[in-house]
Amino acid sequence: MKFKDYSNIMGIERNATQDGIKRAYHKLARKYHSDASDAPDVEIPFKEISEAYETLKDPEKRVAYDQLGS
Image 1 (cartoon, rainbow, N blue to C red):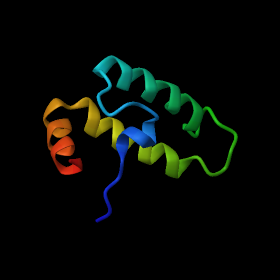
Image 2: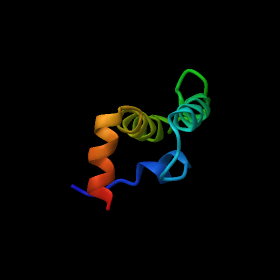
Image 3: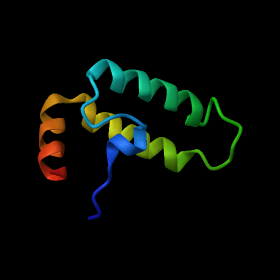
Image 4: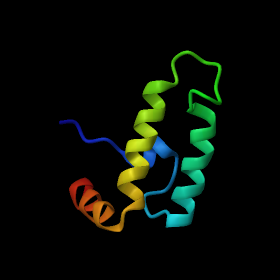
């Protein structure tokens, strides 16, 4: 399994706050969600953004992710 840099996917710093993560997610979700975008190829970026957000928003998952990325 290849390591995914969730901070890079979401366009945030690695030490971003929970509020910063949430703002970045909502901004990207509006851009890539299939209901909000006319582009035909938004499903893959939206899935990656959602996966990154699910990991980074949960404190326990984020600690495990940060340890893996070190």
